[in-house]
Length: 236
Image (cartoon, rainbow, N blue to C red; front, side, top):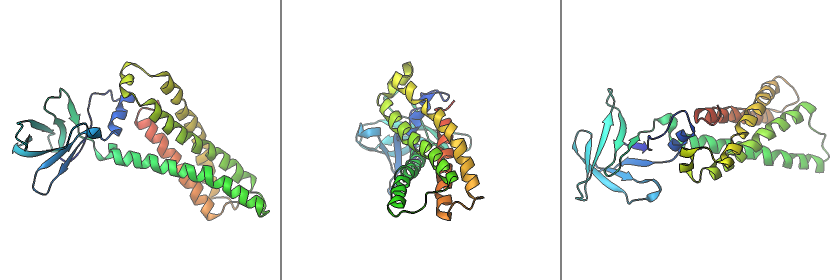
């Protein structure tokens, strides 16, 4: 029973799929064999449930409210039905889980910051110590990666700002979100040369091992970010 259960009232081919990125309702297990239901955003205090029949549980506070679960043919729990709510909650599989995808986004943001902050600092240090400039191919590769590293945080911040009123998506795309959705295409266009440069870095003597590893990690983050955009219908 344990896991995250967001509402399943969304079109899987539209931006409403993003609802699965919210924690939703959560079911956790207790040591005494009961379950705890936690509401998203703390809308209600958590409640404890005890099983009274297969797939049917009742609140232990004496209110009489029942919670029903649905299982597939393999016996795996797929849905949760709440009392006094006319909607079904769909259990999130591991590959759509809130912590996994937010962790991927966090890793992409972190790598972007290492490029946006680390490379300029390194350039200043080289200039102060009067070291020779980086080879032309390394500078070109970094310019391409810097574009991707800038677009990723811009898109994430813009998307979060545009999604402050998610119900607006039911009636169409707000103008701000329409503008934000241009950034994934720019990111995808720049990611291609970044991957090309990353492959070439392992064939060139102009790169140090640390630089190759760092640049390859940024290229991988760009590819994973594009896969994230495609999966959540942000890149059509």
